[in-house]
Image 1 (cartoon, rainbow, N blue to C red):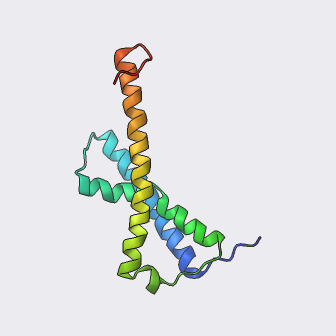
Image 2: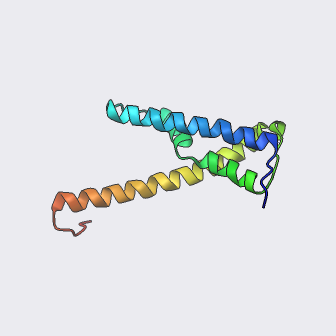
Length: 116
């Protein structure tokens, strides 16, 4: 299969991939500096460093879609798009948080058992 995504789809992928790399490095710097973000700032960086937007763009490339920028940037489409991005992102955040808490409880009590 030969990939031939449209210009709009490919350009969005490149733009979102750059945003992803910047967000990951920014979050790493915040962690190093012990910076704690408020929820609004966390939402913005979490959307970018989750790579969900890159994955959505890759799907478009693989399906050889070319969604015009005018459609992608339409307010209604953006509302639906970010609802989907946030659903995937926050599902991942809640799963990671649950794993973190289980690990914390296991380490805290030192028994390997989880106390609820």
